[in-house]
Image: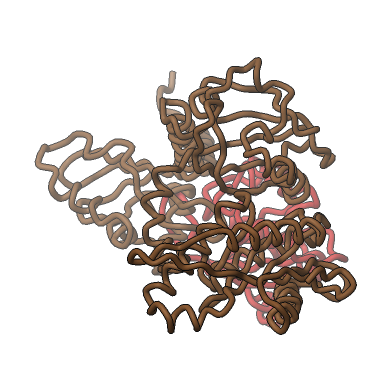
Length: 433
Length: 124
């Protein structure tokens, strides 16, 4: 009996071994001590080809020099006669166009002084997935593990709260039974709720997919906090909005830290109200709201009467005291959504969202009367002063806030030419001056 | 083949010439020729390619080339170009690992809508 396999049998076996290695989906290579590739299967070549700068792969250490020089060091520094040099060592190759970063896993075994066996595979997808999982975990951990500045809730397609949890209770003080089926208005100050800000946010999220807003919100016990709210629409495949996810974030502390700088940049140092730049920035936002939702928007221009005479008679610091008192009086009479700014000198402006011209005239007249009845005391001297107010509202030819203020200024000028200490509206037939 | 050596050279060989050629002529060429049918299965595998790759023609014929024989070419450099370019005559530098030895090669990719098969010409 012939124990030696025939040449034909050897050929067949050789072929199937070759085929086995050709289709092996893992990179295999045997290299010399200096990195010279002695044997390598096609998959190894395929993995290395995008990395190598040379047209041919002749030396593994050279190919990996750019992204993993440690492979050479590990091989050369491995003192044992044989053994595992590295196992599942990660090689970060770098970003591949348009996809995840390429990461290889490399295991190297020293066979003897002259030969190393290297196994390589592309684990880019796996690494990317791990990273996403880690990010997701970190995100959830941050939200759920007692970080009490997040509250998570969901709304149904009508914007009514349909899920609530501990995080929401922690932030707002409301229990589940108190919030279910209510809208986000619950957390807004009543005047803003009436104005529909919360519902507008849901509308915008429905339109754009998501919306972020921030502002003062109210806890159940009435304490306010500065809240960033993210509303994201939950959509079915057909684009139908089935509900909303909401993240409310208590950033009161961060706000107060950041506020010091912001205050310097946005407020008038004397009176503490919005400076000119800030006022027009806020005006732009109101203008957008007006154009989107069509609710009324009115503006007042206020000017302290005979201000030059006050300065001349009592000195500049008395004039400053009058301006401060005027700003304080205005503030005390306005809602939180109204915008008050000092545009320059003794001139102030106010924007009144959701208020029409009749309402604006009422606010203006109340303000005029309050000022006329007030007394400013400077160094023991009582100073009385008055203001003139011009009112206008958006609509007709008044299509933006700068025209609104021009119109209010025109009305103000008509008062200034007359008796002063009076109020006038832009439309001449409505003037009550 | 003296007179036709030019026409049967690696760079001059045309799709029509391959399809019309006697299999014995293809076997005698000094470079490998692999022809794939529309499903990607090996239809033509010349003797040179079989010898250099260490595979027999019978073992390879009928197998899906990019999935079962040469997965190292199943990428955007080779396989994808056949999918993307209906008319294709391009020569690329490549590294193939014949018998586990990385070997620099030139591969010429040939495809035309009117041809029955797509071809890879492989010159070591």
